[in-house]
Length: 154
Image (cartoon, helix red, strand yellow):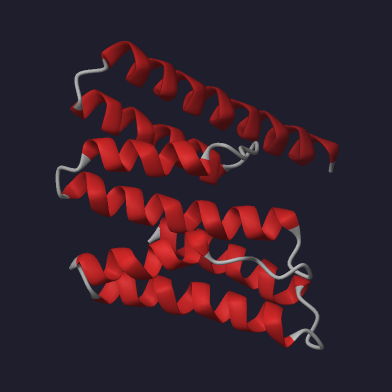
């Protein structure tokens, strides 16, 4: 439930950040939404394909880099989670690695770090998994500190 709310919030931010005069941006955002819906409805490899298409598709220039990163990371997380559930830990790790090439200080990056840690743990790479889990905790701690600072500033 929380994950879906995050996705809706990210998608809303992208939609409001795109100019209605740019149909390419609108089509790209809609293709991401459609891929997520297809993957949610189809547990087969076809759902994986929809998510892979999002990750490989060029992003229109009018979509901000931050919005593109967020939607691509969310798609990568969804794909990696599907792969891990099927026991394809090396593939899940590869997807997470690709998405973490452009990290940010946000929940999406922390989620991908946990996913990569789980994939590494499943492969017996315990030290690497522990490092990923630790980094995810550090990201979450920084996010909490920021939230508390904003609250105290009010």
